[in-house]
Image 1: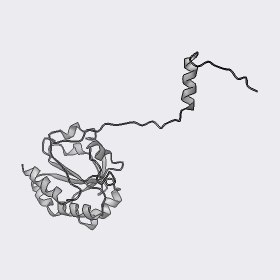
Image 2: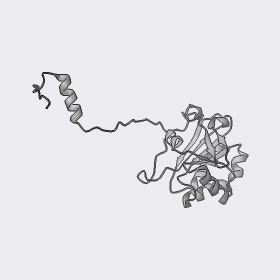
Image 3: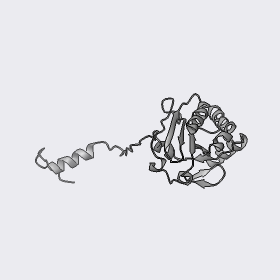
Length: 189
């Protein structure tokens, strides 16, 4: 049988602290990462994800850095093959020649797998690559907030000029086709 010792509270602070720590329920540690949203006027190359390698729906890999010196349109959509996302992507498809005439590269980005993106791109004859952001890291880095109480990934379009400066940050979940008009207007400005 173990001997029991009476310790007067306060007589041994280190022991008291250990006893208190053991009796407290343990909480999982949380790390909080502050994300600063990409804003108009900021440079793409200042993004932590500028060199991140992303998989395309075409089976290739790209980095945002590989488009330096060229206008760039990135439209983030919630989920491939859903009605709103299909309307948005098809509107980008229908206006694609206006984007290429402006010298811009266009990419759709979601957390869908490359295979899901490829099937959707093929079914809708999308002329531009769709990029996979598997853990939504790029979405988080760009500061895109979820919609509908956070249940739905946000729909947001960014346009970067030749110098790599953000000239448009447009967010509208319900008016998916408006993203195309806003992006073209920003490219022509």
